[in-house]
Length: 116
Image (spheres, one colour):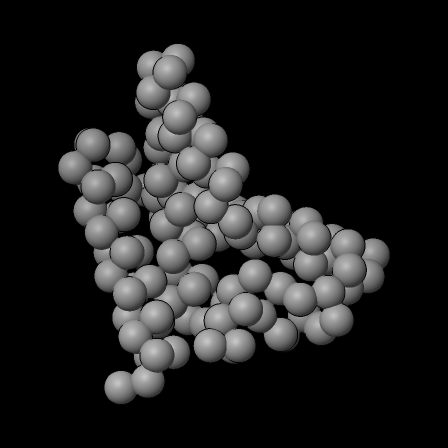
């Protein structure tokens, strides 16, 4: 088994685990399914050019913002933020499981996962 295959499997397991956590918190499953692909709206930046597209896409597909949301959800006791952040993180895990990683500004299809 190659390192790349191991990484794909790890992200797949992380996706399943994040969905499990989501369901254990009694959040509605339909919301998970509806909002799972919302982070892909960040691909809109590619309408401008590859550099802008990669920057916006990477902001939406980095763990930083959803982790900040998790912190805010606990600090302000807002379950909606926790729900959204788990879905967002699940989306990132799912993308990485399928080989879609953070984008390089030179080409849409070139990602950090491919460099493994």
